[in-house]
Length: 504
Image 1 (spheres, rainbow, N blue to C red):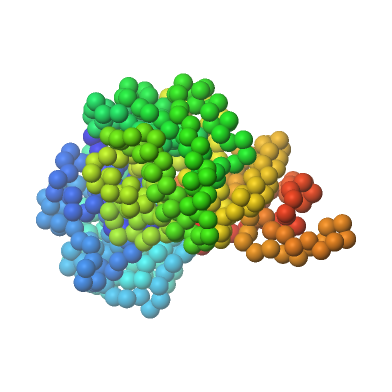
Image 2: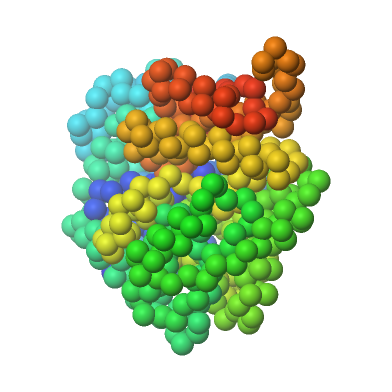
């Protein structure tokens, strides 16, 4: 399937969200570095993403403007992309009197197709510090914010710029803006999950050839869909499930049963002592993640021997938060599947990541198209480092045992009350400092447990779920009375951002 829309990545944390929104509207889009523009063929449109840089920076990322103009395609610049286009056409920017981060109101002032169906005063989401000072010759302002600053420009026919981010749900009519831009294309929508699946299967066969693929599986949605995808591609696979000592209660048995149901035979390796010994005494979250990521590779290599190709279920949030997409995005946290050794293997052409441009819901749709059971697809996300990221500070076997029991109570109660499927991810975290309490008229100096439940579409943003108080009371009572070592239960009501979903 030919790519219809090229999204040039200037380092925004939301660049891939643009890709996703375009796919939702039926067009096949992919993310590319700006430097790759001269090599791209058979496109229908180009979107320039946002990014953390200022166009006026000495090392600001650029675009080959001659090539962009020669392609003669509809172009949309988003935030940094709009500022870059303004500069390339001959306009100027200036630092804003204040940075704009958050909601603003859209004031449409020109009857442009870009804003067909968009409400006046619609909320838009801003994230920038520079603003337009002068316009290029022939450009016109399509919309402003409530302070009168330009937030949308038209440079020429079907060449638009918007200062806000239409890809995030906080821009209430952002989807409509993208839809209006896409209607400027000469091609019709042709993206669907089935066609995308066939494209991925074709790419897997071409990349793997006759090599054997060692596939790391965890039982989560991502690795389950990955294993089924490789199985359907007909390549030689060796799926390995590692018990790293950081799994939830009864997880080994549940994962083994799940893969048996989808028809993929897995090889289970108990490496719990190796992981826990390596983590002993370490409290820094980044170091813990890197220890775990490297230990996974040690276990895979020692168990599988010479690995010709290593496959993992990396998703796009893992890539962008680890800042390993090749863009200028900031490091939020290093995911276990993006440690240096993984990146070295990638450089050698020995890593296969067919899902690395997808978000969780897209992976679920892909799995559904291959007949993966809904029970497996609707399983809440569970981080690769496991309970390590739910145990801030130093990890001990005692704290892990407490965490497993509390987590089991939280999850089983959500399942029984019908709330599990209303929640995108539920997390139980054991906090690193003990608190004073009273049990049986005796002082209890024990750990607090924090419960977290969020809704999200893509893990890039999340909001907390208002679980009914009676259910929270039941969960709290069960944990306080049934889990030894806990004397306090908290409920986390933080959004992402500024908090992340997991504590580490």
